[in-house]
Each structure stands twice: as C-alpha cells, then as structure tokens.
Image (cartoon, rainbow, N blue to C red; front, side):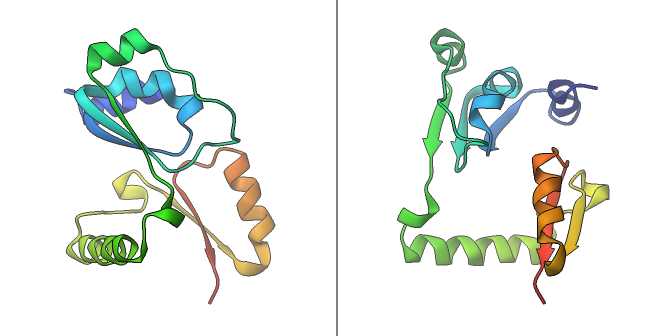
Length: 132
C-alpha cells in the first residue's frame, strides 16, 4: 500500500494539517492527502535542496505553507509548546508505538551511528537515542 492510500484509509476526507520534514520529497503526497484549506507546516527539509511546488494544484486546494525555524520562535513559544505536548502525551492524545502506527526504534547512546543510519535508510516511525 502506498503512502497516500494508507493516509486516506485513516483520513478518507483528507487531513487538515501536515507536519513536514521532507517537503521536497513529499510535495505531491501532501497535495494528494490534504483537505481544501489545509496547512503544511515544515520545520525541516530532508537532505536540503530546493522546494518546487505546482502552483495550480496548490491553488485548487487553497493550501497554506508555514515554515518554522524553532531556533527563532522565542523562549515563550518553545516553553508553551513543551508544556502543551507534555500534557497531550499525559492525556493520551498523542499515542506512539506500533499500535498507534508510529513504531519506536530505540538505540543506546553508544549506537548513535546506527540510529543515524536507520534514519538515512528510511526507518518508519521515530528513531530515538537513549542518553540515560
């Protein structure tokens, strides 16, 4: 099953928000899965490069792009985000793990190179390095 089909299975009417870390690679996928008037928030660009968009397809969806650089949003916004995400995790609103469709791949600090390689190899889910 391709990514668009998998997303549409979970959200048949489309999604309102995409949090993007590979905007160049996923530009068509985003168009394929969003609802009209959706937003794409990008805080990274996998392997750099330029981002080119199909103006007409984006206009048809009235798609909005928001670029975020966490280093420049300010301490108050970062603190609020940490607090809000922590509360959402505690409340169970942001489930993670295999059952939630977001597998976790854990590596000890001594295996950081292996964790980096897992990301480069396209690991699905979250790659975590345990530093304790």
